[in-house]
Length: 148
Image (tube, rainbow, N blue to C red; front, side, top):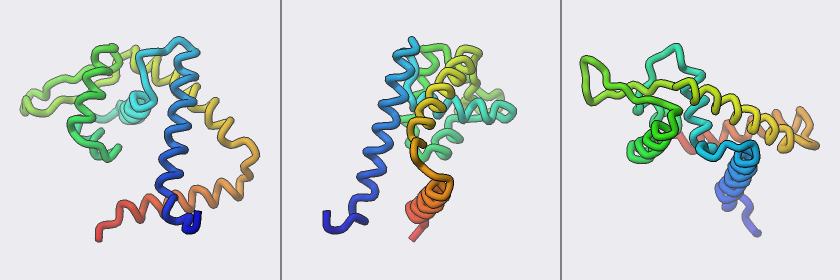
């Protein structure tokens, strides 16, 4: 590999897939088949914002994913009784996304799986290395979102 810079995105993608796979396997071993890691991120977002009105467009913007993708995710989550979409009284096009009790339970289970996986990820990493990692990730995030 001559130019490592050319492979940064590739390596981040590989790492992301490995983390998702590890967490999904942990969830399945804990008996949770109806939720994926993607569901987990959405559930966390809804849980962290349960004191606010959250709409599909908020989820699209927060995760930087398209409308049809979020629609598919929310439909499956509704089928599994994790969330409910409710029409807004003054605008039928808007649907508020509400976290249901089962969604909160699944959020907690996923949170535990994420913590377990995070402990594994952090093996042998010093606090200084972690600080450097977050600094680099923040720069990458800013670079990718910079308008040019």
